[in-house]
Length: 183
Image (cartoon, rainbow, N blue to C red):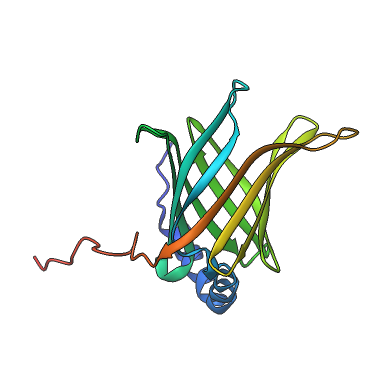
């Protein structure tokens, strides 16, 4: 079977992205409050049911001209070791008019819908007939986020909570790209 060239797909992607760059740019600008470095306390319930408490750090920055936001989260235990590590990519589809959050954490990965709100955002992880719903508010340089396990007919159970303060700007990940070198 002949190998197909990726060129037609690349051309299609280029045409589609050229049709609505301001839509994506405007959509991603709604999430500009996320950018920067953040530090604070987080606590929750681990997969094995044990409780944990960490010093949570997050850094978020734009890439691809602002079309995506990269997120790195690290939770440090009292002894300084890493107790939690996650990486995410937030993007916007002009075609579906939805935000996508691709998350990688502790050996798990998934793609979820992120919904901006007036003061933050929400996103859900489906678990059987229920969800774990993360709800964040960001105001005056404070990011507060909770995670609740929600099943039909049952009261929500809080599984995660963090309160972070914005500590500054970051040029991550766009800083220091590989430089062009003429041949």
